[in-house]
Length: 190
Image (cartoon, rainbow, N blue to C red):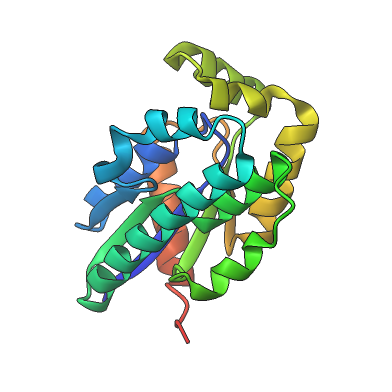
């Protein structure tokens, strides 16, 4: 049995590391949005859409659609897929950036993960990590408390599991999250 697990959280909580660890624990696949095929052109696309938050949100939505279909195919073959960010982040960040278009209706056409896990981290630790890795412009917007709370509210509304990883090392986080996934199992997709 496999499943499609989306791992969400604010910038700097360690989603990419956790996704890699989980893929190893479950002998599965680590994926992300946008996917590898778009990674090199991502900055050029975001620069081209610099003044259009809706266009940026639609770019990320297209990535979610593509990556989600790939993930679902793998899960249907009995493989585990762990996605670093998915629709919850796309929607949450768009809303926090002021997108007022009804993009939430697009979720009806997107592949839904079997489980969405939200990782939370103490804010001072998250900010330390952001600065240590060289925070991007996108990372920096989460330093604004109002922006950050808007994103967190939306992520929490869409998460099946919320796990506070404050004070845990990488191995402890992987054990905690993998244990929660095993205990809750992927929900049945309608």
